[in-house]
Length: 199
Length: 191
Ligand code: SF4
Image (cartoon, rainbow over all chains, first blue to last red; front, side):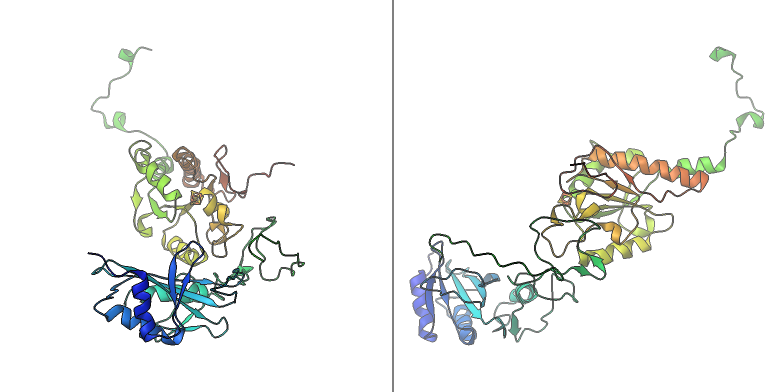
């Protein structure tokens, strides 16, 4: 029992979403990038279409594209990307979806109505990357304490210097090359290292 | 005097009474029944379980794991404590009955261990929330080090029970493997 090929799935997605784009990640993994506005449509198609029937949301995760070297297919930007890994237990095919949301007004429609597993995944992505999942019934922090400030997996996250009055370093403790914490002086700008292939 | 010459216990009740200080007797009972609260949050917890297993068998020291703080004399904090978890440690400690003792096991519980440099969420030492009696360095400490710490604690329990002296300065188990960072109490090596 073999499912559809990736190309066939991508073509099927393109029928409901004109802006869908097939991109290859750096290690050659193909995925479909859709705009956030089209996500409910595409997700419903993938979930319900009898030929696609992606009934398992294997993972929903995200990453910060800041400092990420761009290439032709995905130019560098500072968006937050949300990634959906879907699998069809019926047809045994899988597909990866990506949605990008701008950093400042970071919101993506929820898919928890289609895959209840997304309820926890979306809380995690909200907690660590600050993506607002519109329509999620209880979008609260899941890993950090409720009164935590900031979203730690954002690449411009500034580590707190203390939490509830407990400082982050013990008295007299110092680490060379430790990440900058709140209250530390601004680092002096150093010229960015140039690496071949990543201008 | 040969054994045969010793007076045999007779029917006289005075010959069957052992005279000792009640405090000594109670202390002996107490130090041989240190029930501990299992508080294993990370990899050090595996070593704690190993200490309870048949090879090291801390049961023979009268140490029986308890699942509730109400029945525990001793809390062994074995593992990484995050800021979110720290409040739970404090609550459990407050629920234990006096006199209560705390053993901090492993670099994480002592000082944040391998996470103290790069982490935003790990507490740098459980002693910020609860008073610690014995520190055991190591990542993770071997069960021998844990037993070493417990023996030092038993000494303290006995002193407290017989003389009413509660040592406030923490004991640090020496000679244990301590790869990640320093821990309070051990002098830094001179450069
Ligand atoms: S001290 Fe080492 S072994 Fe123990 S909990 Fe921390 S990382 Fe794990």
